[in-house]
Amino acid sequence: MLNFDIQSHRPLREIVYEELRSLILTGKIKPGTRMMEIELAEDMGVSRTPIREAIRKLEKEGLVVIEPRKGAYASEVSLKDMEDILEVRANLEGLAAYLAAERMTAEQKKELLSVSEKFHQAVLDSDVAEMIRNDSIFHHLIVESSRNNHLIHMVEQMQELVLRFRYIYYKDFKRAEEMIPEHQRIYEEITNGNGANARFEAFNHIDKLKDMIMKDDSFK
Image 1: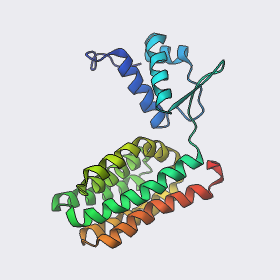
Image 2 (image 1 turned 135 degrees about the horizontal axis):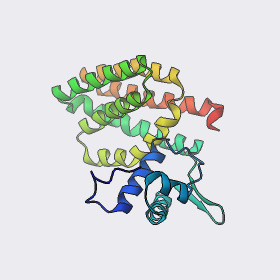
Image 3 (image 1 turned 60 degrees about the vertical axis):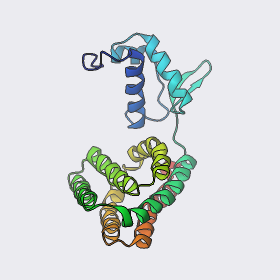
């Protein structure tokens, strides 16, 4: 049930929409799950009206599919979607790493190292939520350090889809372990101011993920 005391100044429809959106993006509502208005309303302690409004808004964002006479479903994440997004992401974040090697401040480098170490610890602890959180922060710091507003905006537009993918592909724990040295190499090349190598390592890091997904039959 939603906590209305904290956010009582906000319209109910917005709170319900953001809650459902978060549940889909984080995989708590899995792709293909039917979005039953009555059940969702009961679970969240609201009427069906804000649920219905939220579902229609989520449909416009592509997170929900409404089928006539069948109902609403959390949209599937296709292999092609994942491949396309990761292809673009590899190139954009490669460029961000290249620029970050020239522009990242000493304070940002310290923060990047700290986040990388936290990711490592999360892997040792088998804490998927912390892995995802610190992986997201690691990449965000690099993009932010590019100081290129257009590049930052383009990457931000992909972040929600990327978040949804992370909750899907983190089922492969071996991949999480491989990411530890990859993050370390990216960090080292940025810290050393080697833009070309930083770009290669950042691109290769995401390209390996794309290859893993393409070879995994469970994604097909």
